[in-house]
Image (tube, rainbow, N blue to C red; front, side, top):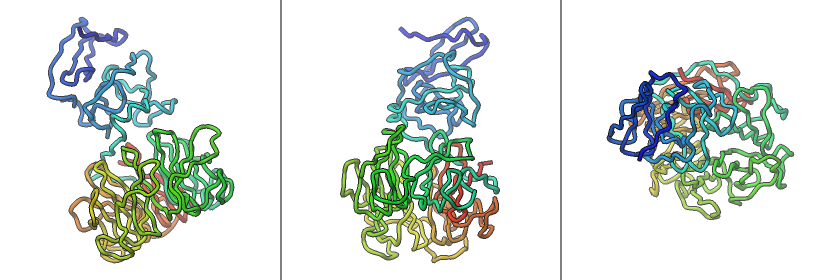
Amino acid sequence: MIVIRLLSHFNSTNVFNTCALFPTRCIQISCNLFTISIVRVKSQSCDGMSQYDRCSRNSTCACFHLPGASNTGICTDRYALTCSELTPCTRPTNNCRQSDHICVHHPECLDIPVCYPVPNHNKQFCPSIAINIPFNAKWTQNGVTIAGGNGKGNATNQLKNPLSLFVDDDQTVVIADTYNHRVIQWKNGDTTNGQVVAGGKGYGKGFNQLYQPRDALIDKETNSLIICDAGNQRVLRWYRRSGATQEEILIDNISCWGLAMDEQRYIYVSDIGKLEVRRYQLGEKNGTLAAGGNGQGDGLNQLNWPTYLFVDRQHNVYVSDRDNHRLMKWNKDAKEGIVIAGGQGKGNALTQLYLPNGIFVDTLGTLYVADYGNDRLMRWTQGVNQGTIIVGGNGEGAGANQFNGPVGLSFDRHGNIFVVDYDNHRVQRFTIE
């Protein structure tokens, strides 16, 4: 027997679709006469709906207008709620008050945007949001300062030569505020003051201290930060729960710079001392070589100052090979890498990079890089031998369309760009048009 909860409080003439508990069926309900018809469809991809509709990580067994959500073909109705229990919201601002809720167009609620809970444990089905960016996307050329920008300093509205950032699903930005020896976060919409979430007790090796953290990311499974505590040559876990001040050492005696984590929660760390990248299972101390490790050089099996990392869903590792002025892709278990951008010596031509830093790869395989020495952001599509400037390239400066050493780079799920502007001591956001 099939039991369907009818939403009688909505207008009876509306029709809505949902891929519910049945992976090979799509249920169509007409509220007019409370009639039900079941129509077979090929798969749980919700044929006939928007291109953005996928079986999302929101555990409703439904197809949401949620750009980038993965179609896993797996659903659970464990957290199904009636529409009367959900709070209306506004897309794409995601103005849900609860941190574990997300604003989605819910097909069971007549496509009305509502705040729906995102249970942590359900992320095994869709562990991360893949960011789909159109190949010809453009961004506003004047950035908006969303953190810092008030001169160099250690007040909560200032940064001091930050190096990296991590953008959470709710657009909270976590920043490695390197020379303030702290990790600080800025909540979405609050550009006045940040909140210190790790360190900030002066530099040192104490259990509540950091020393020049270069990178940080969020491990959502444990609600903790993974931090490259570079000055202390260690990788730490720092819990985000209220009042937590003590860290756990995950990896010691490592000249770390960049961090990444895949959906199986393996941690990738670049080591500028050994000129390599290693992959670590949680609790593992030695790890497995993922890139480099063959001494300093520009050979395809070598690196020269590997800094920022990105790992895709196939576990391929992208490395910012800074002092070789190139970006490398190392396929999983490969013995050598592939040059995918730069590698033509340092310079400002479209075929060149100059000390590349932060990197990001979208689901199309398009590469985005913070070209530090040229004060610009570049996009390199697969198979081309030159990039295009998407933001910056207007000379060094503090203007809204300028950088003074772009380093860290990330995107939110809407495709907006976030950039750490190193010597302007700020983080800029560039909105996708």
